[in-house]
Every structure is written in C-alpha cells, then in structure tokens.
Image (cartoon, rainbow, N blue to C red; front, side, top):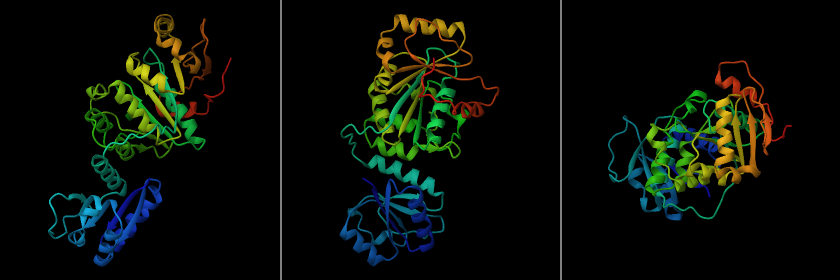
Length: 340
C-alpha cells in the first residue's frame, strides 16, 4: 500500500517541483496530493486521512492534524515565525528532494507500529561466503549483482561483513545502515520503511546498497533473529537480494544459509583457503545443509579439488588493480550456468 502524502503550500512553483520529482522517482511508494489554498486544505483533511503532510508556515496553522499521522512543517530561515504546535517537527524546505524523501520516510518509520505480517518475500536470495579472507568474495558478489542488474532485475546488495568494504565500490553517503541495526535491536518502529529510506542506488550499475556501519561494534548488535528480519525486509524491496557475508561460521551464518535460495562458496588457489574449505567440508555440520543449493566459485586461478559435490563457476583472471573495473568485467560471466 502506498504512503498517502499531502503537500500544502502557497508556493506553487515549489509544490510543482516537489510533486513532479516524487511522481517521477517515488511513485511506487508514495501517492501525492497537493493543496495551495486554506479552504481546499480543510476540505481535504475533512474528507480523508493522510500518512504524511508537508505544510509550509502559511498553511500549517489552518491544518487539523488529527487527520495526519505525521505532520511536518516545511521551514526555511526566511520564513516568519508561525504559531503551530511544538509537537510538529520541522523539515528543511530547501534541500535535495532525495534528502527530503529520506528524512521523511525515516521519521515516518518511527511513527508506525511494527507490523511484520505474513511472509512477503519477493526476492531471490543469494549468499556469498568463504571461510578465508581475500579470495575475492565481495568482487564475485558484486559481479553477480551487476550481471543481474544489467538484465533488468532490481538488485539489492547487503553487506554483512565484520569490516565493510562498501565504500571501496560505491559512494558512501547518506545515513548509515547502523540506523537499521538500532531499530532492530530496539524492536520498535517500522523497519521496512526505514530500509526504503536508507537504501542508495549506484547510478552506473543500478545496484541498491546501504552505506557502511558507523563503527565495527554496530555489526555485533545483530542477533540471529535480527538478521532474519533484516533479510525479510530487504527481500521485499528487490527481485534479487545478494548477501555478502563475513568469513565467520556462526549462528548468523547458519540463518543466512537456511534462508538463502542459493549459496556461492568462493575460493582461490592458495593452500590456506584449501585447508580452510577442507575443514569446513569435513568438520562443520552446516556443510551438509548447504550441499543442495551451493555453487563453488573458482577465483584467481583456483582449481577444483576432490571430493567435491557442488556445481562450479570459474571466474577468469582480470588484469586490473581497480576493484570496480574487476567486478564490472566479471559481471559478464553467467553464475547460472554450471561448468565442468
């Protein structure tokens, strides 16, 4: 169901600019109504309720906010002081539309009562994991993302590494994913709406992603249940959800593996990685649970070693020191076609 938003301001140029931008870029989530006259505003608020209302100083005093879940005062330093309830939060009127939307949705998410509802999973979930670091796991995950995005899929990349590398590949701007972790920990608010407000999209690859956590400890906030909920809400916002995992093999790893539709195990040619995979395959009880949906990704010249029951994807060597160039080049490889 779309968010019902009312824009009430006498500045018609501003109203047209904002409403047109919302219609062009956010029509999947927001349905906009406008009002430029006090009489029309009162009639609209008597006839229906709104989830969000953006009210400028010339209109706010006339608004009956009982019909608005989240009333916000559009404010600039040039505005004269107006008499409105101190409970109405202020929103900077003159900022980028993307910033307005992000701020509004984040505030709205905190107003909602959490409603998880039935299982609404939409996305196909793919997890990328390795017991060893430095094998090219993130590069492989992003190559998969870019390939799916180029085929017209809506792709969301979720980095759950202990030390995030998001900023190596994408612009690390906007609010951090730490805000989602904090909401999950508190158990209050609407995580779905917050996820929608915080996600960013790379303009070139069209991969959706989140800015990295504010600090290392923020990732440790996530419990197994938090991880499951995070996957649920992210999977509702895309056709493909790609989870880039830490090298640990704990209960959170088990939860991701159980939830994923497909698991990509990334290895390189080093003896260290071979030994760690050997231990994983022979000693860890998660191994048996992954066999039917796992694919081994051979990277950096790795060769398949026996015994091995998985399907295989081989990635060619790319001669470049630029991380973005490497994953974009590898995006041309099909991860869906098993290789011998």
